[in-house]
Image 1 (cartoon, rainbow, N blue to C red):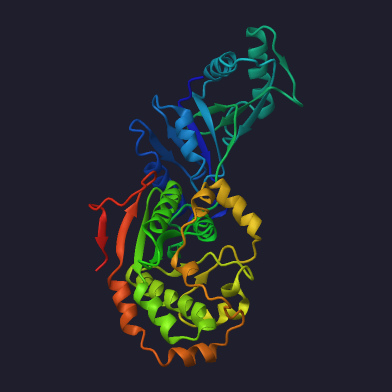
Image 2 (cartoon, rainbow, N blue to C red):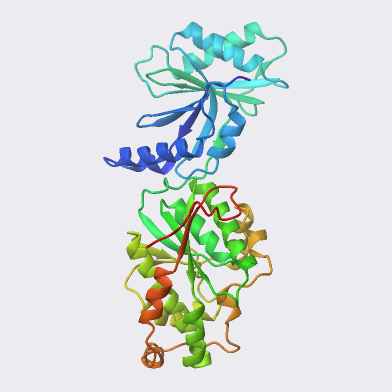
Length: 402
């Protein structure tokens, strides 16, 4: 079958009102960026549909990429026919005759252009009769057909398709603003990033690296996770924070059972400074309520005091098995399970406080001036843009933020 179009349906975007055009423009931009390696592809959009003109490109390769783009409810490889009824009849016959193993079929016509001279029932009968007259050994089955030929009548043309492929849903990336994802090497934070992008957030990642306590292989995990997230967004920016001196000072000055609380608070402070410099509006974490000691409600209450910036927690009510299932679906689970510890796990105390008190952590931190180290960490970050399939830092793409 030679398809010349892919018809994209919007889903949630269709519920938008006067700002729908902005959502459509974002989606169009994201699709064009994702399909940039298909030089002959052209993307067109209107209020109700988007069309990928293939111009000879492999529709299966294009479809495999469209499946992962947020903002697409579903799509169909399609043939485009002129609005003349004879042209539509010829196209329907060509479509069905080119398929193998089709013994039964039905026609399902949708007429968004109510001015078209034939009703949906008339189109079903005209096209179905034409196929029956010109093909041997094929029958109509309206309940369980081998093929449902969908005919969509629009003002500009008529589109014929036999397959509806589910899309990723959600909103186009970039429509909801920018946020900073606190990305560890674990299972949860990449999933939180994925779900945040599904709601239209444009993400940059912040990773805390503490050499020599954390290895280069731990850092590599994060690069590989970013590469997977970049498959969704087209590219992603990673900020690698030197965190060794801050963690050493915490271990030296803060009582052991409160070191985890202080560590999270300092991470939030650093991430918030980077957020401010990058003009982002929120911080995203992979926290799930009650999963570990730092994720009790009391811990979150004590840690959140470090910033007034909104902290988004997409996984807050999710079970670990549900999170792992999503990680498996987005192909990050195996990477996260590599046995290389990050700075969060290396310095975990034996008996962390599960119900820390704000007043106590403030008291302990009052004897230590972290401000200078926070600024040093922020100004010492390494920033790199990661693209799909990229597994190492290209020094030409790596830059200091300041």
